[in-house]
Image (cartoon, rainbow, N blue to C red; front, side):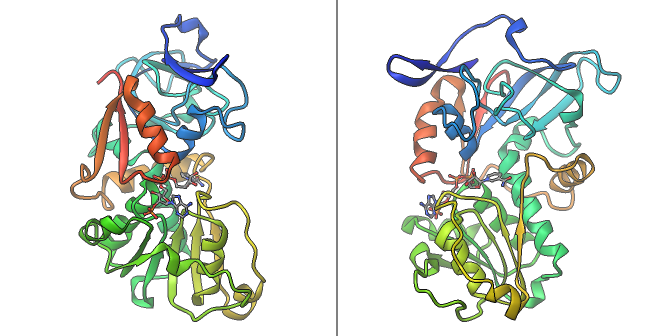
Length: 325
Ligand code: NDP
């Protein structure tokens, strides 16, 4: 397992072999085949106190694997399963390990139509992107209403949001800070690509020209405030991220005068029935073609470099972690 500890040189992760008794409580033991790297994992790997409450810690908020043993009547040895979110990789040791032990209530059967590896290419990023798309749909923003915007578009949640929205027929405007990746964003289905600086309005104007019917924001801060102020009447922005800032400074005018909806997305505690529905959609009607596009595959002992890249905002697409596959 990748054990993150407080050492004389600061918080460090290293591969260690510990007895399974050290794993946290749970009624199902899963042999992990694949995990992934999300922004939150990078924070956990560096001991960020907002994510990790206690050291030593094992990161990994996503797991795909095979049940090794179970005292729950819901699962048997050999079952193919997934776990994303809940406390996995936060207060509960996570999936950057050969085994995880979890409560059976956290487990989702691996949906037919997705391999364990493909499920981790999606991982929490794909699960969150799907929730953002569902939030936009619930607020009755259909493709016919105009452009939808996605920020942090080359990242995990962003790229999968672009691809899902494009698949569903939306005209997607991808916002990125990476000048060399515009063509890739178009290949993923973006109709238009904008530079990040164009959705960063620091003026105090309470509202801006209405441009979007909806959107997915992974950035937060000034970017989210800019999107909300430039959303058209009745539009909806699904907000899930904070790579650009946790503050939201703006007036309430877009809500009062344009009926704009700010839909929060919190994937870790997504209720179980919706969780099942999302995974089944991702494996079925929303299944993306060429899931392997821009996937970096690393063994557990090589994850550090990717952690630094994601923390620097340099990651493109998804990183999956090969463990027992
Ligand atoms: P990634 O690092 O893969 O993607 C983030 C992208 O945001 C980057 O690739 C970059 O894209 C852009 N970006 C990075 N830094 C900045 C910056 N300072 N200002 C503006 N844009 C920036 O991360 P994830 O996709 O894993 O996560 C994205 C966000 O969503 C994180 O804040 C994460 O915590 C959050 N999240 C929330 C969830 C929830 O349930 N609410 C679940 C999953 C993730 P580009 O260069 O294309 O602009």
